[in-house]
Length: 471
Image 1 (cartoon, rainbow, N blue to C red):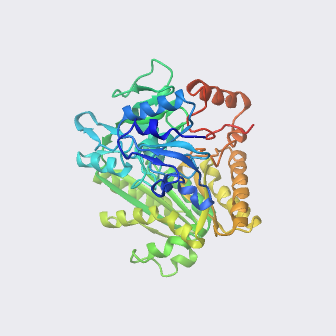
Image 2 (image 1 turned 135 degrees about the vertical axis):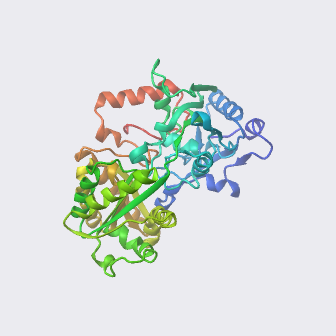
Image 3 (image 1 turned 120 degrees about the horizontal axis):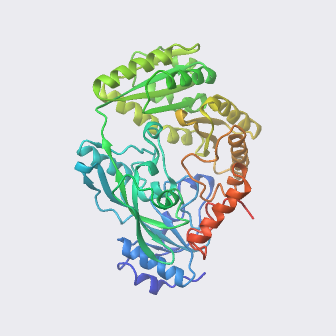
């Protein structure tokens, strides 16, 4: 398709429209699925500075039948921000004014280009808490988090991104800037359009800003790390932690493969653990108590008791110093990178299963990998049953990439067979197109497609993404 560069350039600031094949535009052609050889082609990349420029771009595209792809920080794992066939990429990164915190009302107004971790830090300056903490928090943008309904470890207790959004500023087709919801926390009069747009991955509209609720920040967080000799023992510890009488802020897990890639870095910084911990540990569970100092301390004790009292426990570690707690979570955030480094690439999916089937999903992932001749591992959010089932690949070998994609298809079937879902926090994007047909009945798939046509009758908003089924 031919992109009218002169006309589009007039809608943004000078120098804010990049030709799609220019060197500076290359970073907008892929996301974190690049290790799976997923990259595309853009006709141009627009860098608007405010919501009005986004509105003008969408209006022009709708008038001239130009498909467009919204983009946040490019940290997605489903190809949702990847242009495929010369579309206009609209990057929201310059909508990045500092979050406006209203501490007396426990809320914030943010633009779509605000960095997730910056929003959390700004809230913390006022003693408030913004909980969603995806692994990419230091580089992902709030608009992209809303578009994918991103999660993270602490969403077990506090909820995914959508649970924190009370209002949206969004550009809808054919180029209308509207506000849906706002500062109030209760609003049940109409259909829940806000929730419909959250997680829509730019296929229904482009989020340019949002109102977020905040909470008083917990005074203390105290994790417990359990080391176990099998996935079954870890599953038993998970059940014990979930019925011990507190609501953990997070419950994370790592299987033997993920530990083989990353555990050495943790053991090097944790004094006093048994010397043979690495050899004996095949499964790790991390649970965290939070609240005021007394409540967190009581919760940590209860978690230690619960997570120790299962057969197959190697040891349990309960850090108390803030520096040690921070070190633990920094290590946990680095697990994905450590796994990738094993062979230079990975294909990782975010399937969800009922928590009681976690050990079964972990074992099945290894079996699927073995059949496809790929090393496999899992880690993720145990309390939510959210499994980052992963196949490690050498991305320079096309046959391995192909086998990993085939193995991923089996993961989706596994999740549905166990009563779960094909995605817990990454969305469908491009790579999971059609997988909803495994999970939903026909009438629900029809509604999904009808909603898309209602919001985007020309099919120009992030085309070819989040398809409920393949025709």
